Length: 138
Length: 138
DNA sequence: GTTTATGTACAACAATGTTGCAAAAATGCA
DNA sequence: TGCATTTTTGCAACATTGTTGTACATAAAC
Image (cartoon, rainbow over all chains, first blue to last red; front, side):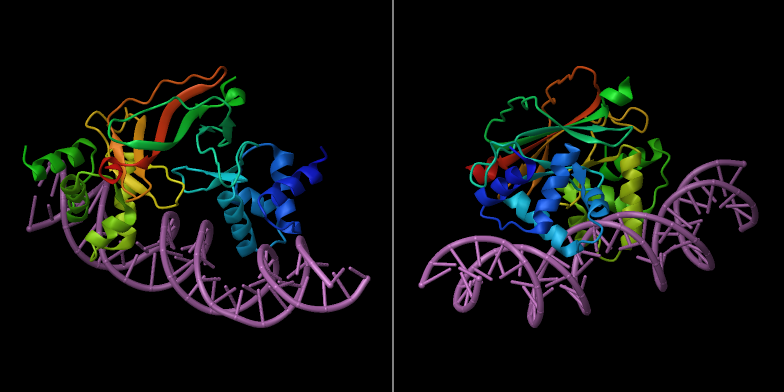
C-alpha cells in the first residue's frame, strides 16, 4: 500500500482526523524507519507549532500509534507501534536497545522474557538494553 | 552499624565530602527504604536549594550511590544502589516494578533475565514492569 | 588554626511541557 | 456542493524541570 494511504488508514482506524501535521509526523517516522526523539521531530518539522506537536504525539501515544520509550536521559523518544496495536488492545511489551556510542534507540523484535513475581500482577514489561549497536560494535 | 555511620562510610568511600545536604538525602532514602522521585525529596527537604539538590543527586548517580530509574512519565525517580555498586564497578542491571495504581516504583531483587542479540554488545539491562503491586493487587 | 579543595546558595537562564481560548480545518450530512 | 458540528490548530501565557556562573561557606588535610 502507498505510504499516504497507509497513514490515512492508521489515523482513520483510531478516529483521529487526518491533518497535515499528523500526516507529516507519521510520514517522518515511516521514512526514517527508526525511533525518534522529540528534538529530531522538531528539527524536521521546523515550521510547525511546538504545542501542536506535543498534542499530536500525545494523541498518537494514547491511541496506540506510537509508544513512548522510557529513558533515564530525560530525552523522550517515540517509536511506531506494531500493526497489532490499537487503541483498545495495545501491546505494551517492548524491548529497546540504546547505543551508548551513537545514541540511537532501536526497537527490537524479540519478545520480552516472561517474568512473574509472586503477589504482583504484571501487565506490561519494558526491557531496555544498553551497549554497542551492530554498526558501532563492528 | 548506626545509620549515620553507614551514610558517612558510603560518602567517604566515594570521595564525596560529608555535608548536611548529602547526609539528609541519604538518610531520607534509608528511612523510606524505597525509590523516591525528585518531587518527594524536594517536599521532604523543603528548605534546601533546588540547584544543590540536583547537584547532590547527580553526584550520587555518577558515583554509584543512587541509580536513576527510567520512566516514560517524565518523573525521574531514584533508588539506592546495592552495596555492591561503587564508582568503578557499578552494577547497572536493575529490575523495577511500577504500580499503575499507587504509582510506587520498587526495586526488585530478582536478576534481569540474560538477553543476547547477535551482533550487539549488551552492557546493561533495565527491565521495567508495570501492573499492580502486592498491596494494590490484594 | 590555617590552607586548600570542594560544595552550597543565589540569580539568571534554558529547555521542556501544559492550559485556555479564539480561529481554522476536517468530517458528516442535507 | 454547501452548511453544521466537532475536532484540531496556533498563539500567548504559564508551569515545571534542569543547568550555568560565581561569590561565599564549609570539610578535609596539614
